[in-house]
Amino acid sequence: MTDVPSRTAEIDAYLVAVERHLADLPEAIREDLMSDLDAHLAEVAADLDAGTALRDLLGSPEAYARELRETAEVPRERAGDRLRRGLRQTAEPLTRRLKDWADKYAVSTGHADAAELRDRLRPGWWALRGALVALVFLYLFAAAQFNATGYNLLGSIPGTLLAIALVLLCVWASLRIGKKSLEWGRRRRLWTGAAGVALVAYSFYAFGWSLSGVVPIGSVENASDDYYYDDPASYLSDIYVYDENGEPLTGVYLFDQNGDPIMIGDPWNCEPAMDPFATAEEHRSQGAPEGDASGAFDDLGYYQYPLCADQAPDTTAGPSATPSESATATPGETATPAEDSTATPETTATPSATPEETATS
Amino acid sequence: MHGTVVGVDRSQLLKGLLDIIVLRVLDDQDGYGYEILGRLRKAGFDELGDASVYGTLRRLYRAGHLSTYVQPSESGPHRKYYALTEPGRKHLRQMRDAWEDVSAKMRTLLDAPTKG
Image (tube, rainbow over all chains, first blue to last red; front, side, top):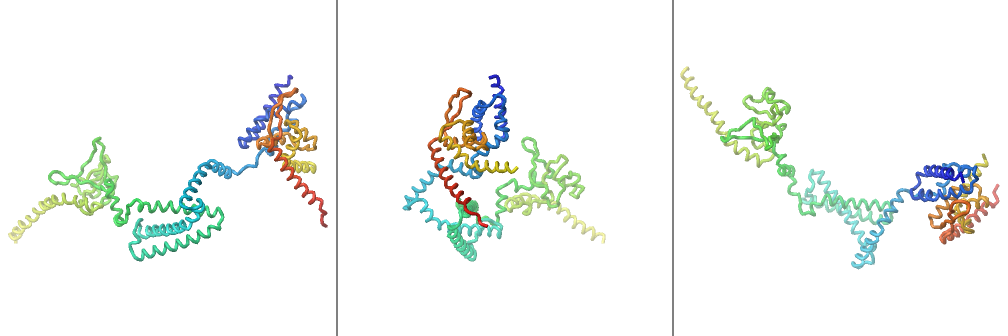
């Protein structure tokens, strides 16, 4: 009995070694094997002579584990099959209930069961599928041709004829494919079904606007303009400031309530392209008028308004007609007298010169 | 060298028959792991190892063909005895039929005079 503790240690060491070599087995099987192996090895050891080691009788733990694995391992299911079986088992109650509902629904419509109803509906689905293909094609065709989605191709008679012809052709092809697909294998039909689902999903995406009741056909021509109207920040390109006398102010800084500079607009947009990194002095030396303190940036890097001083706000200044018209209205009235006042001395000078000329001559 | 090859072939053959062998041995009398191995050795299946028998016992147990019970022994630790269940008996019958069928055909095939 003195060898009992050493026997136990020997069994334990053997067990650990065996388990290490079974590490890659499925957990359930390994646990089942290991759960009883200690008892089994104890039985084996009980019959051993005192001088004989466990591995003398059973061989190395590695060989033992290999033999164990060969006999105990159930033929392994492929991972894909296992996953599929697991999913099917999990979803089984749900699928059965759905099937019951589908059958009840089919029976209430006067059909034997859901399968019969499905068979009846199938050609309808084929036709719908073909029509959807045609519509999606027309939609993409119009988009590629006119660079605008939602273009009303049916607006013209040739377009309508083309659309009808295409729909008929696609429905015919789809019906043919559908009839043929009844003889196809499972995999091929699965792909066809998946393509059908994808088609429906894309159709919802592409034609969703028609379901919402908003048909964007009217806005196609000036769609890009509409976009700018919706977003005032992207529409603002410059700011012109005038004093109470209607005199344009230049070199104006704008700050918000926090004292942070307001830098809206786009100095890169100016007609004579400015070097956005040049200081005001550099701008002047680059040919900007001396008296004109325009320079989109000062030394601090803030914006100085107007950003484009030599671009008088007129109809071309703004990207849209309406706001720029109102902008020209105000400075236009005040600018004209200012120009007149400078022009007047010239015109008055001319007559005064004339007498001198006549006097000298 | 030749001897080893024969040994390997035999153990490969026996691997497919482990179920029927172990079930048949237990059909006579319940047994525990190491003792079952002894019975098999006595029956001439020398190349079967302890791990094969133990692994087969566990697999048959998992499949519901065997049940277990523990019995104390005078000479050592408790022993886990394995016994056939009703599905196990049925499984043994089916496998036995299959084996009879295969072995009869094998006998005919092997006994047929070789040509040439």
